[in-house]
Image (cartoon, rainbow, N blue to C red; front, side, top):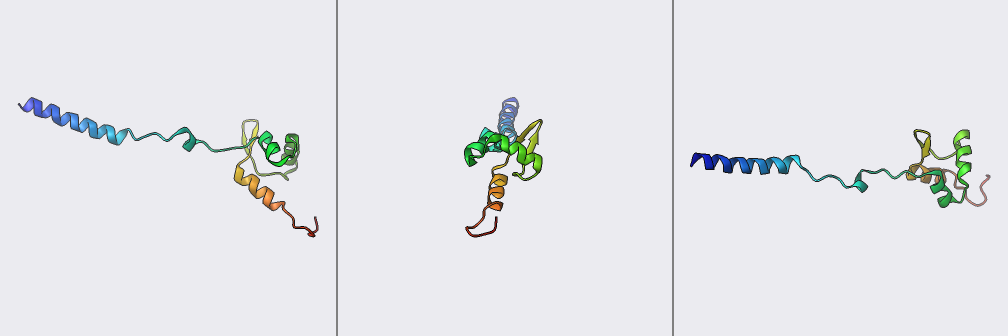
Amino acid sequence: MPLEHDAHRFAITRLEFLSVTHQPKRTHKERTVKLLSKEDLEVMTGIPARTFDQYAYRGIGPEYVKLGRHRRYRPEAVEAWVNANTHRVGDAA
């Protein structure tokens, strides 16, 4: 009888262990950071993709993240850059 009791206790302990250690994984969408390419910016803004290379070289474009040899842009940085370059009608450009 004590042997069966120990086996039952082990089974409960194992289930408790699994519920603590095997938390649901985050989905792929939750782990990814949305970064935009210069081609994405071209579609969004109508500005040719190559122009963003020149903007980066001259330091006048949106902030970017350098991943290897690739520049990627955070949507918030692009929005901030667009807002910073927004002028009212009649303002000196």
